[in-house]
Image (tube, rainbow over all chains, first blue to last red):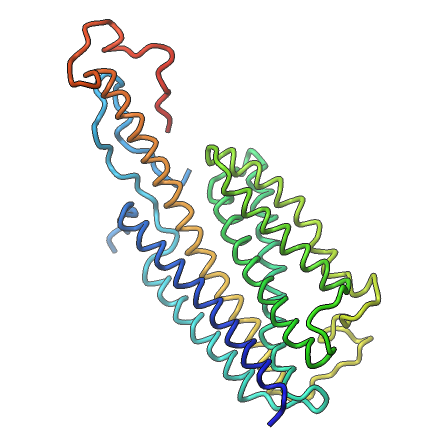
Length: 45
Length: 290
């Protein structure tokens, strides 16, 4: 096994963690804001 | 303005004690948002699988080069995000095209740009340790990228300083245009100064880098496309949140104004004052704004 795998593993974990963390934070804030401020109803189709 | 004015901007002499909620229109419908979320998640997962499993080990760099399947799309997105921030800021500054949506787009895109710039630097550092033998070098590309990160962190800090949404939008739009000066410097730094970071490789004939393995090309292409879709999805969601936050601020302001008006009419202890100011507030009364 290539000795560089630990760097690769850390890099991909970091990427997944930062993107996942940002998405989680954003979804939480959106839900909280939606509870306090209902958005406009979508027009009926 | 995307935030609709509350109907409670009623006659000052009879303020409503609790204004109706400020309604913020959805930028995209829930079903469209869901489709984009699914495509983004699948795309990023596919990038990881292709980068880690499908792409073969490089003959010279071994497995360390797999970090480039995240590094390169992140770098492209940092450019794209800051470009969008600059464009939206310019559109806000022009009176004819001014809209709070441009300000929201600029703020959302800059935040994502900072996220991807952080990723570029981290992934590059992790790649540089086994290949260059150093986590960091004061190379032209690395240094200008770090400067870009701090410039946009400053931009995000500036957005958090108080003031009306218009004041915030104006000052941050000017800051965004100033910060964008660094973006072409980052891009051309490898051509202008010969330091450690290599020149552009994939579309550069002078470098004579030819990726013969289709799996490597596919992993890079999937990464760029997937990260771009994820950026667009996150950007729209963040814009929605910024619009909602502005709506909440507006409602809080409206509540505070109504509370003061109610105190003027009834008095703090609930007694109705007999003076003429009760029915018509004086010139020092805070203005009810849209």
